[in-house]
Image (cartoon, rainbow, N blue to C red):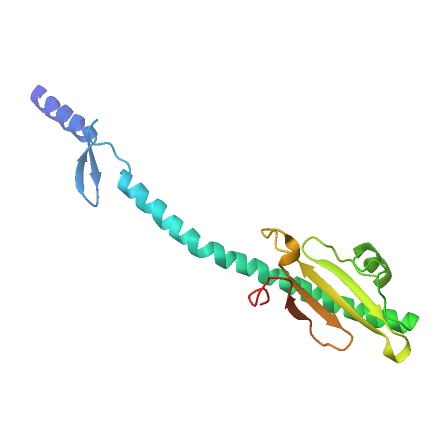
Length: 177
C-alpha cells in the first residue's frame, strides 16, 4: 500500500510540472521553457498592425474631409433658403458688412451656423431685379502653412441649385472632391 501512495504522489508531482498544449503536445513548465510569446511573434504582430494603420489612416482622413464638404454644402443650402426668406421680408438679399461675421449672418438670417471647420461669408449687391448674393464656405487645411495659399471654397448664389467647389491658391485640382 505504501508503494501505491508513493506512485500516486509521483504522478501528481509529474503532472504539475507538465502542461498539456493541444497544438504541440506536452510542454514542460520549468525555468527553461516558460509559456509566452517570442520576440519574432511580437515583431510580426507589430508589423501587421503598422501596415493596417498605414492603409487605414489615409482613408480615414479622406472620409473626414468628405464629411466636412457635406457640412459646407448643407449649410450653404440653408443660407440660400434663409436668403430667399430674407428677400421676401426686406426685398433685398442680406450681405454681411464685413463679409465674414458669422454672428451677423446667424442673427439676420436666423440661422445657427458655427465656424469650427468652415469660414462663412456672404457678398450681396444690386437693387430690384438685379439684386444678387454669393455665399461662400472656405476652409484652410490645418497642416498647410501659410494657409492663404491652400484650401478650398464652396460657393452658392441665388442662380445655382447646388454649391460648387473651387480650389484656393495652390490647392490644385485635388483640393475639391
